[in-house]
Each structure stands twice: as C-alpha cells, then as structure tokens.
Length: 190
Image 1 (cartoon, helix red, strand yellow):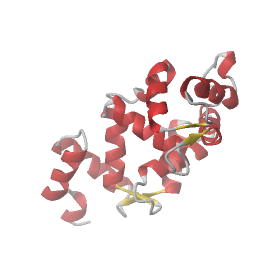
Image 2 (cartoon, helix red, strand yellow; image 1 turned 60 degrees about the vertical axis):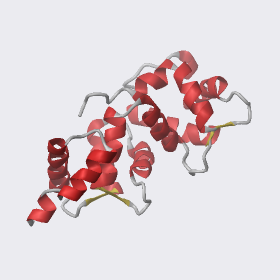
Image 3 (spheres, one colour; image 1 turned 30 degrees about the horizontal axis):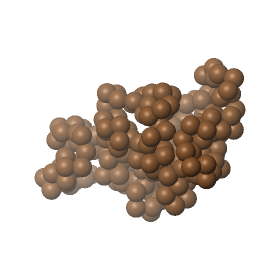
Image 4 (cartoon, one colour; image 1 turned 90 degrees about the vertical axis):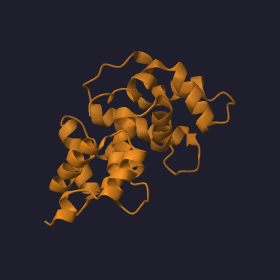
C-alpha cells in the first residue's frame, strides 16, 4: 500500500475538518483504521452487517444494519467510502441534536420521500427489537413494535395524516425522552 492510501491528503483533511467534528489527528487515525479494515477504500453491505453483528451478538442486527447502511451510503452506490463513514460517525457521535434528528429522520424515511409513514417506522422499530432481542425490558405500552409506533405517532402526528414530516418529527422527538436519549447514546464515545 502506497503513501496515498495510508494518509489523507491536505485537501481531503481540510474538506473533512470542514464537514465533521474531528480534528486532523483524529481523521488520520480513523482513516488508517478504515483502510486497515477496508483495504479497497470502501465498506460494503456484508462487511457492515459483520460489524453490527459484533455489537449485537445475541440478536439479529441484519435488517437494522441495512437501514443504517442506507443512511451512511449518501450517494447510494452500494458502498460506504471514508468520507461517508466519517461524516455519519461525526453526526451520530458528536453532532448537535438538530443534526442527529435529521440523521434519524433519514433512517426512518426508508423511501426518501420526505415523510415517515407508520409502515416505515414499524419496519425500523421491528428491526431494532430483533437486534436487541430480550436484552432490554420494555414497558407494557411499548412491548411490541406496533405499540411503540402507535405511541410515537400519537405524540408526533399532530395533523393526523398518518405520516410525519421533518417538523413533526423534530418537535415530537423533543417531547419523547426515549428518542432524545437514543440520540445521545453515542455522545463522546469517539
């Protein structure tokens, strides 16, 4: 592997520092690790599944990893390059609440039409429940994906049209402490 593949150029560093919350040293360290794990310079869906499986060995993380992969893969080319990876990591680990809300909205808006339907949210919540398995004891009003989605929609869908736009999601998330807690789960980890 040559120098070009083992270090980011000054131009790349400047660009990444402008669009992430990482400094030059952190970016070089993350890049070195990314290239070690992904010598091709990209991370494909199956490798992404393996990473999630390591973090959730007792559940089935496949479906949720797919939804997350789709948000990381900004250009929708089927792979995640370093810029896509570090940008998503920056938002999820160090981003402001507003940035995390946009990221989470993209996760739930499976078809990217600018709305989250009950069906879309149910698919993602089902994937989360499968991933965490019985590791978490849920309250009776949230012990199934459908109950959780119904509860969320009763809080967020202020115009009762069966879908959430970004504004409803933003405002509703601020009223639901479990969503705010989930958004801050990775704060300070990297």
